[in-house]
Length: 180
Image 1 (cartoon, one colour):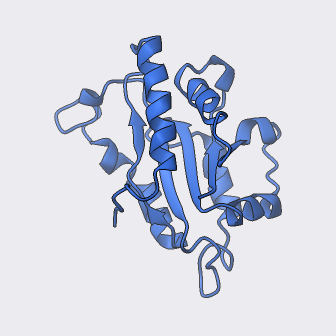
Image 2 (cartoon, one colour):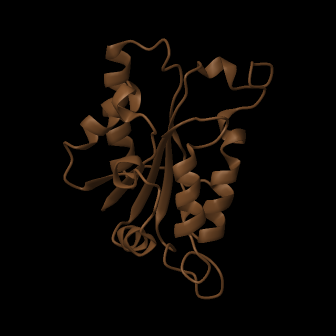
């Protein structure tokens, strides 16, 4: 299985979690890492290249820090420009069918903040529903997200452990339960 990890972090050099995740993923030959902010510092996305990259992989990961209850803006722009009618959806838009989509998300706050009664009032599952709706529209199979909560207080060992679990998670195709 060929895995494409589309990283959308506007300040990856100062990231503890996402940067560590990338370092771990680089150890695996079946994983292609594609850093949107490094590739497109001017935010001028090459749509044809992005679509080709997606077509060449079986599983697509959107990796990002949770940013104002969504993804950083370049990933949203990528979705708007790359997931076009006739390619990703619509009558002939089937290029992503039979592919899998996973979100890899880091949050600053702990998991207890993402639940009913918590500071953010909603679970991560609820807050990530728009991404699942996008997956449904473009015909990918939406698999459970890999979420790392509490990056503000995490230790180096906890972050390193999460990186290993993340790599294992996205490479283990046959054991993931599909979400519909």
